[in-house]
Length: 73
Image 1 (cartoon, rainbow, N blue to C red):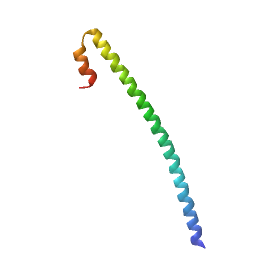
Image 2 (tube, one colour):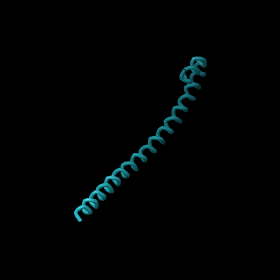
Image 3 (cartoon, rainbow, N blue to C red):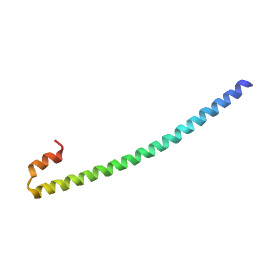
Image 4 (tube, rainbow, N blue to C red):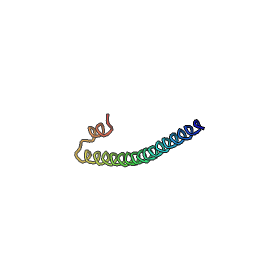
């Protein structure tokens, strides 16, 4: 009889620990999705900045040096 009480207690402890792990994994997944959305927005803004930089360099007459700068080489 004493062994079954310990077994039930151990099962309850394992269940509680798994629930806590699942709770934190849920929030980790949610934060990861938020970071992905922020990265997508950042990439699009960088693209707009590159386009504006190319236009500005064309106006200034520095097209050749600007293309090298914008491409990242």
